[in-house]
Image 1 (cartoon, rainbow, N blue to C red):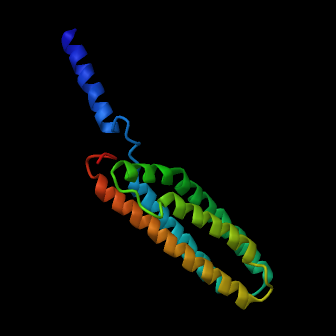
Image 2 (cartoon, rainbow, N blue to C red; image 1 turned 180 degrees about the vertical axis):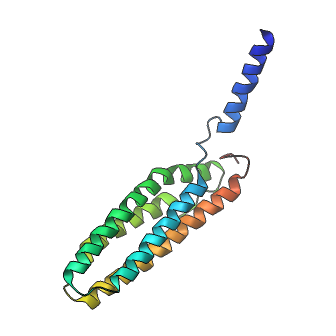
Image 3 (spheres, rainbow, N blue to C red; image 1 turned 30 degrees about the horizontal axis):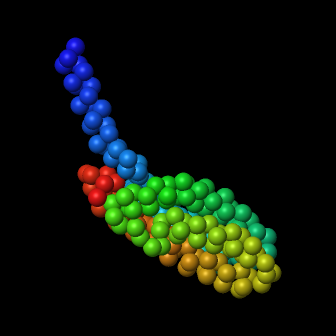
Amino acid sequence: MKTLIVVLAICAEGLVACSGGSSPATPDTLAYGRVANDISGAVQTHRAASALFATQADCIDERERYDGRLAPLLQRMQETSGEMDACMAAMGHPEAPTLEDTCDSMRSELTRHMTAACASANADVQIAEANTHADRMMRWARLEFDGSARLGGMMRDRGCRP
């Protein structure tokens, strides 16, 4: 019986050590990076589709398709970005802008774009708006991807501990 209690105590201690005790949960940096890549892919697809606009209806259809694809990806990213920032801060590396701030900026940009995307009936204006939006989103998606890779490299085998 004593052996079982000792084994359980060691296992419990190992679980606390693995979770970092009071440290934040160790986020899945690879999954976060994949979401950033998926966002980049959706943005690139949107840019390419926008270049083919011939009518206002084309713009509206693409805008709705794009929002349906991108909004869930941003939601997934927002659900994890705070954990990523907390882990970085726990390791003594608070970064500015934080991943959460960048994610919020992406969400705001998507909202702005949904309003501006088809505001003009002129296809050239619509295409220019799509390109401006894509440039911003690609820059931010790259920051998110780089941040997840940087955090993953810092964590290695130690989780969110300094």
